[in-house]
Image (tube, rainbow, N blue to C red; front, side):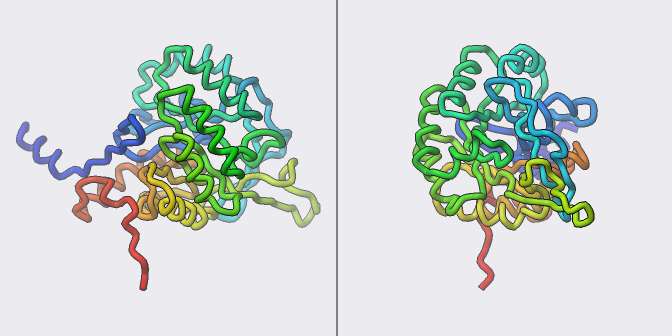
Length: 317
């Protein structure tokens, strides 16, 4: 039996992924805004098998979010305009942090703010407490709020300044989440790298709109929202590949990933790990299925370590 286990370990691919100072057991994370605070699906999914959970965005004060309707299904995706509804950092610290003890999976806290001071204050509050949060993903790319977030992700100078300010306040993993709604995402990624980010995640949702032809009204109260799901995968792949030509820090790919092939495509484009988003609404265990399928893919392709896939896309000439 011992010999069998040793042989099994030899043939199983190594899926471990390192970002900054943190090593994750596999590259499959669940995306912010699709898995709640990280606790809601524990009875449905063995979360300990995931690489990491990224929480929904946490702001300095509680937010109710935008008025309904704020979600609409679209062909090959969905548009949301939730508006960063959350309990605020104080309640998050009081209620959620203690519940993470023993959860068995790394937690990455997503932070959103309306000013540099707000981002910094939230991070400082988190740094003063003891928690098993391994790092922070900084939301500078949300298209669903009137104030805060995306303005920090469209100007390279502002991105670098904010990243540097946060870097000076923590030694934990620092990830800047980028928007596709920019002229050149490579410039924003370089700014994040220059500011000291350990990684960038890309992409957040794409601006979208939905109209009811019968009522002649918009299907979203705020008119515009963030499009996610399979429809945006080609955009995400292009952004990840562009970023990979501009920075040396790891890239976490996001956008339309529903199966192992999607995840592998992102890795071939240059991502070292990926986040599963909209697919979680249909199947909270989507990430677990993808992990198993990636193991099978690597085994069949004789790939010993998942890193052997990163950035290995070949040009079709």
